Image (cartoon, rainbow, N blue to C red; front, side):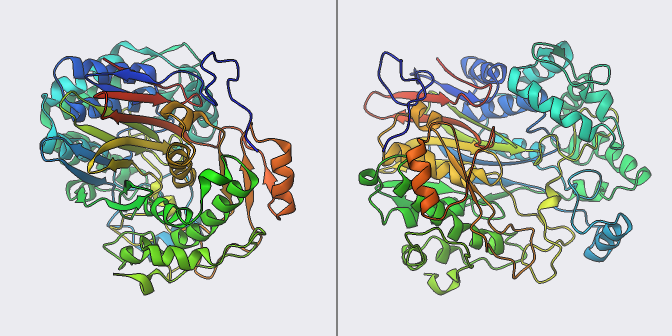
Length: 559
């Protein structure tokens, strides 16, 4: 049984699409904010490459969509470098403060009558990796001077920009929670004490100054210079733990993207501390079923996908951690044999209890943007504060909020993801890339916490199994399963009640009824299904195809 069309009166007759794909020959940018997309395309037109455009668009998004990202957060990227015909992966995530060890954190939690790391305040703050990530990307691949790359964001921060609709909605939700935090959150992110409304002009001169210092003096301005010293003083004066030494010693890591072949397409994700390998695990399991015959959105397909997600997420909860602190059985995770063994646990009925596997036996809120240039370079980049506007802590004069990524550590001493000083926490943000016959096929991502691997799999199967075009693949109705064990929970915790399957508008009641009969607990969510951007390379016509979905304010634009 098929789902209801999202736009059934479109003259093309295409299912699910809210608009046509964007097609262009020389360059493409897709982001979640139209003005940021325009910044990226302007950089391309001025002679910058895809890497320059990605950094410029990301800097603009940090200003224009502070509800999802900013220079107080972390960054991950996958770059297709046309000249070397190779994919490069960058992990630009930061570590926990060196001065905050487990015992000290436990005492802090006890003093505040907390059982886990809170989402706001000083305790969840880790080193922001974004600025270093920009310079790593730029030093390796960039072509345009950094001053010119960052100038559009600096100009918008000084002169202001009109806030877009969905971002204004989330901004209004964040302000009441974050305004009470120590520092300049209210001064920086409100207008007369209130979040900006849709269409209202918002300026951030402090951020303009910070970006100007970075543009002029490089990454060291942030990690070793005036900005780092200002941060260090503020933290010391206000009970924070992030220090000058933490910033000065920060480094990003170039990593080898991991892949699996799904029906002839090589899908690439980054290794942990992110959750990208969940996508590869799910695809390996789903490849053993004929999804095309089962059909898009049928109860058989939704049941299979949900059960596969449950099994993979139990592995995710136990093993996806900082590889500097734990020997992760990566080969086992992406093994087809391991996928086959895990598939044997799937029944016609919804599983209530799901246990972690043993992959070692098989060894052998957030923004996403993507760019592409006339040389064939493509960038898949994701960047986040973690929970919306992060910790709420804004050091006076800096113009940005610190991330709260440290909330994703576990406080169970036996867990691989246990909190430790100078350790990278489990990360949810994952960029993706697909090659076909060794050539670029698609750069894409889908923001939104635990939705991300589920969304990646849905987009890929929509294209590969169900024959949708790039825009349809993003706009089609989605599902998200909640309730799996999380990497923050204690060892021994496991899914025991089956969780809850949330379904987006467009799933017929007949399908929902059959899922209920299989034992699924069905729910309905508003706005919890992520945000998709993508660029596809059409080898036959030698053109780029761009898509930006309807759930966000975004835009794909080319020239």
